[in-house]
Each structure stands twice: as structure tokens, then as C-alpha cells.
Length: 138
Image (cartoon, rainbow, N blue to C red):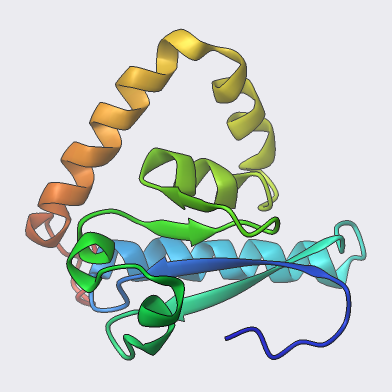
């Protein structure tokens, strides 16, 4: 999956590109990460975005069931550990400007975790039913 040969750590994000909400979020994350990387502000990690609606090969290589990946976001972090659901989101946020501080704050307040997890799971369960804008995105 990771064809890069340098020693940079890679975070692999498995997302549903057929989901308007997921695609919109990933597009924003990619833009923010690229802007920060281009400014040279953060280059100790890299993110590989894997659209599971186009290929299931990478999921199979990682031992992730397609049905599970369609339920909740899955991430393989830079150390090779798999994260799921809100933990996956926070792992991505740790590497994205503007979200990094929010992620750090949320992780320092353990009482918020159950609420975040519940909100994430509710959103994930109903993501395809969310209203779309004129251009078809959520």
C-alpha cells in the first residue's frame, strides 16, 4: 500500500468517497494539510487517503472488513496502530492544522470522550441521509 521509500511515517486514512459528507471532510483535510506542508510547517508525517468506495484491496491488506470500514472511519496511524471511529478522527485531526489544537484539547478532557464517540457514531450511522447542498455535497 505505502509505496513511499523514505523514512517518513505514513498515516493511512480509509474513507468512503461515495459519501458526500466524508468526501467533503476529506477534501478539506487534504487542502489544509497541503497548505501547511507547502509552508514547511509540518513535515514529520504524511497522510495517504484511501477511498474504499473505489478499491477494497487496501482494506483486505490491512485485515479490515469492508462492512466495518463502511460503518466507522478506520485509520492506520504512523506507528502502524489501527484506530476506529472517534479515535480515527482524532488521529487525523492531530495531523491537520486548525484541528490539531482542538484534538489536543478534546483529548485532555476525558469526560468529553463518551459524548464525542456517541456524536460520531450517530453521524456515521446517518451520514448518507444528511441533506445535500445544490451541488450534491452534504
